[in-house]
Image (cartoon, rainbow, N blue to C red; front, side):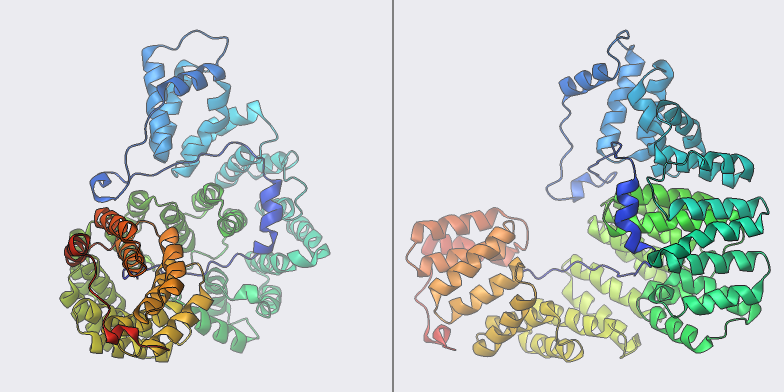
Length: 608
């Protein structure tokens, strides 16, 4: 069974128009988007099974000449820049890719392929103003491309060139989308002071029931902008009846409005939504406890930013992370103080495994921002993921000095010690976190669970079982808890029928989890039902081929079935694996390879 776990902070990003995601996605042009493999800077020696990508120079040359078939051979500076750009692109170094492609274009100004894509890399790296120049070049090549259209439009709104932005809308390629065009038009009309025309543009959204939420939200923001407070409150109160009002971004908007105007009539629903969302995660709690009002629409810039961020959220929901990052960077350009957008960009970078880029981005967030502590924690978690546990522990101890009563800080310190196999120190940190945590918080069951893991790793199996049971009492349907509790009993060679039932429940919930299938197979193994055990253990190894414990278990069942050569092969293979391969396991494997397994004891043959 796999003992180490990944911790992921769950933060619900409300996308008011997520139901439009498919429509928005398929309306976008299918231009080539960058596909990258990230290798964190200065961390390659700390990441398992990651190596520098091989460079196919012949393919690079062919690709380059295919893009410029009738021109002369590029000079050395031009071609070397192209090679650097190609390498940087493969490593998702957006900024370096853009700069190198810009050098290529400077010496080869007619390169159509680079003209059509260069702007994307500047946007992805957050250099939106730099991207504008190249966005215009891309539009010269293809006036129907929505991505550079939105870039240029956002820039015109940023510089308050509303008439020019309005003129651009005439040619906006929204692919027949009924959401994007009317909203952008309405906010640009707000910039022009055309209140009634702006409202009229929003009215088109009412024709589609699926767009009514967007209508309520933006009509409320525009009414508030035009100082029509009572009208704004009417739309916000109607919005509160919808599930879309149950997300951090909307609640920050409504909180600011209510604090400033006391205009909401349905204060009870607002308070209930606010409390429920605040309790969803540490990040939600932090943001809503000290809002910075960055979500508030103070004008056309913030309004257009909201629309672009809706696009980013929709792309994030359907896992088109390149487009999600593209639209989010444009939104941040228009609303640079938005904590919501900043956190979203960091999370997108993390999801793409660009942990170094994410941490560099987080470092730019001011200590005065309401998400500062959250991003510090995310930075530390990324350090742990990249294997830099020593730095993570140092950073956490410094934060704990400043915030000694932060339960989540102590919990994360426990995670760092556990990642470093220091289970004694991890246990002490988890105990401290438990003493500080609210017993009603969801993280309390996780703290019990992690303490159980530490006790199990320290060989204190009775205490481990007790804490797994505590975790299950608070969260009885968690398959990971069920699996650990059952497996701990298996290791103790006791309560095997009860352990089998717990693990069966876990398998029903997640039937394709290698660790849990291994536990089920191991339970049958301990009961002497080797043929039954074999099927589960083989499938477990198929799902998690790199895990030493799972491969060792498969070798054991081969031996019991008289397949001795296969058993020794499996044990030998397990000894070469890195995942879950402790020194103790290596010693056991060496002994089994040499001597095989002893005869099964009567204790192992307990029947259900």
